[in-house]
Each structure stands twice: as structure tokens, then as C-alpha cells.
Image (cartoon, rainbow over all chains, first blue to last red; front, top):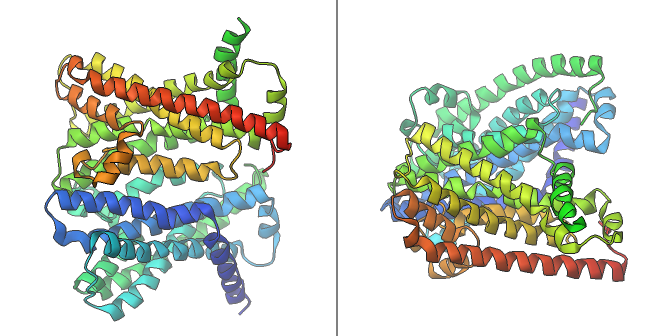
Length: 256
Length: 261
């Protein structure tokens, strides 16, 4: 019960904080609109207007990933800057439960960008919003948020030891957009990319959302988001225990 | 002589001190890794959309990624004076303001060229991009002019950073807006009229067009108009940036708000 309270309290706090952050305003509203515009112009120029909704959903998911990535990169770094990292590690609550709300909140705030690109696409580019399975979509979005939030948690745990987590965040934005098929189908990429895409939650998240919106069988993709979330949680627990111990042993916890 | 020292030595010191990403741990993933994947992402997006060929995206993005240095590094090397609380001591010196201000651009331009050349290398390595035989010197000249004009935009942002509360928001936005408005990934004539009008007064637009033509084998003489326009835009932005710098310096002194955050 206490654990749930820690997660829920942290989640509410961080959703409110991130919603007021200029940086997250940029990643969840403005950048998805810019990337969606580029993609819309390209598919129109290439004579593929039938893919507009497909593109809008992909561009929205790009925003979710950016938000998750920068949120998880910042999860440790912000605590370091604010001098609260040692205090949080020293509290009786497991540190994993302190980090989880930050990454879940980042993914949740990122989900605003899905709504943003759909509204933007509809108003500016006339994207049709005929949803094939609206009920499945209502389930797919939280499943995707959970999948990405837990992937963010796994990333955040590895950042305990790495001082330059924000640089890694900058690096990982485009490759994950690419290999998870958010805008470009994975089948167009080299064959060796596909297995990588299978272990990344955005792949299944975007599939679940697209299959809900465009038609298909979204439930298996929704299930994969949740299975991967469980797997990420187990891995994150293990890594955090190891990395936290190492950082405490080396007295590098607060070094930034 | 003192002004020359401020220009060269002062510029280099400011760059080393104020550019946050200079450490290899930050520089490699951010200044090289991110452009690498940006180029691949848009080249594959172009293939998916069936628009243009890989060379179009390689040239457009390889030139635009200079913004990693020209926008971000330039903004930091000016605006960080305020964040690091060194602005007041700096402006208390009698140093020549023009040398003080423009000297910071030189390392940024050099760095922007490194990032762009790396972008072309990525295109060659992963996407089989080959500029036309003999086009490299002309392409280099176009690149230098374009990197200069993009740096001038960074100088404007840096100057605004002497006053604005969150200039890095503006720097991020500017970097990504260049992707949209300058014909980097969308053929310029496919953009709506108002976007073409905005794009035509931004740095990069004419430089990218010139670079594409030169890389495709056109002689430098056929793009001189584009190169001069790009240079003119750069000079105007640089002049505007310096005027803003002086204005905010004077305003900051008058209102005692130089380092108010």
C-alpha cells in the first residue's frame, strides 16, 4: 500500500511538474507538429496521401518517445542538480519506486503529443480521423504509456553510473524513431534491425495504436507492451541494485 | 593588437569555457551521433515517401546539422556568460565589443564545419553518397558561407539569451524549425507560399540549394547568386545580433539587470 502511495504521489507530482516545463512543452507539442508537418509534406509530395493518419500516429509516438527519453535521462540528472539524489536514495522507500513515477509521468506527458498531432493533422492537413477500434485505442494508449514508462525506468537505472545521461538521450532519439517503425516501416530497414525492434516497447506501442486506429488486431501488440514492461521492470530492479551499490561504494552518486 | 587578441584568444577561451558539450563524453553522442542518425532517419523517410533520392537528404541534412554547433554552441558561448555569472565582470572591461562578440563565432564556425563534413562522410559511408567529381572545393566554399550564416542566427539567439529567461527553448525550436522551413527534407517548392517566404529569409535555405546543385555537378558559377544571398543573410543576421548585444548591454546596465535570471 505504501509502495502504491509512493508511486501514485510521485506520478501526480511529476505529471504536474512536467506539464509546466517549457522543455516538455517543446517535445510534446511543438516538435511533434514540426516532424508531423515534414512527414505530411513528404507523403503528399510522394503521392501517398492515404498514409496521413498512419503518419500522424507515428509522429505523435515520436513525441512520446522523446518525452520518455529525456524524462528518464533527466530522472537522475535533475536530482543530482537539485542535490536531492542522496536523500532519495537514503529514504526507506525503494529507489526504484522513486524513479518509476518520473519515467511513467514522462511517458504520460509524452502521450499529449499523440493528441496534438491528430488535432494538428486534422486541422492543417485534413487527416481523416475515422478510428477502426476506438475501444481498443482507449486500452492501447495506456498500455503504450506503461511500456514506454518502464523502458524509461530501465534506461534511468543505467544512468545512475553515467554522468552524461543527457548526451545519451540526445543520441538515442533518432535511432529509436527509426528502428521501431514510427514513421518508416521496419521492413524498409536492413534485416538485422528487425530483432532489435522486437525488444523495444515503442514498436509494439505504435503497432497497437495503429491497429486500433487503422484496423487490425491490436490486442497482441497491447499484450506485448505489457509483457515488455514486466521484463523491463525485472531488469531495472536488478541493474538499479547493482549500479546503486557501485555508485554508493565509489561515492559517485552525486557527481555531475 | 589587443582587439585581435580578444578576437582570437578570447574567442577560443570563451568557447572552451562556455560551450557545455565540449567534453568528448558529450560531444561525440550529441554533436556527431545525433546528426548521424538524423541523416539516416530522413533518408529512409524519403525512401518510404518516394520523394527525391538519398543525395537530396544527405546534402540537406549534412548542411543543416551544422546547426548543432552554429545554433547551440553559439547560443551557449554568449548566453552562458549570464548563467555562469561572468557577464558583469566581462562587460566591466573596456574590451572592444565587436572583437569580444565576433571572436566567439570563429571556433563555432570551425566546429560547425567539422559536424557538417562528418554528415557528408556519414552519407558517403552508409548511403553511397558521392558528390560529382571535382565538386568538393566548390561544395566546401558553399559550406563555409552557409555555416557562417547559420552561426549568425546563433549569435542572434545568444544575444537574446542576454535578456530572455529560457533561451535554450528558443535555440531548440530554431534548430528544428530550420528542418521544416529551409528545404532540408521537404523540396522547397513543395512548401506552402508563406513557408517559402519565411524560409527565403532564413539562413541555410539558399546554401542548401547551392550545395545540392554543386554536389550534383553544377559549376560554382551557376550558384553564385545563391551563395551571395546566403552570405548577405548571414551578414544581416550578424549585424542584427551585434545590435541586440549592444542594446541588451546598455539596457542591462541601465536597469541593473545584467545577471537577473
